[in-house]
Image (cartoon, rainbow, N blue to C red):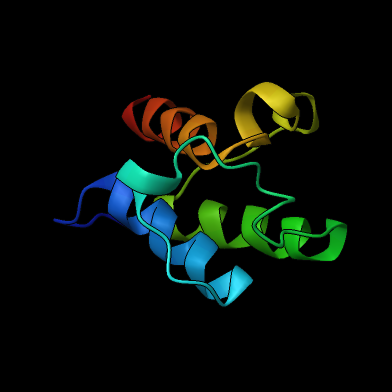
Length: 84
């Protein structure tokens, strides 16, 4: 699915919904996703939501601290995947 919204805004919106928190990518980029409330179960939901929203496939070996450790890391990861 394509969108006119910037991927950073969409990723932040998805994480905000999953965490039930109002997040801002410029303010919360360095925040650890676990500290924001992303549990293991919520991580599964997050991955599914990102795959569906951006029409991407997230491999098991891509799920790690670099890509899923912080909101900013996740945004960069999704932006890179969405471009390929």
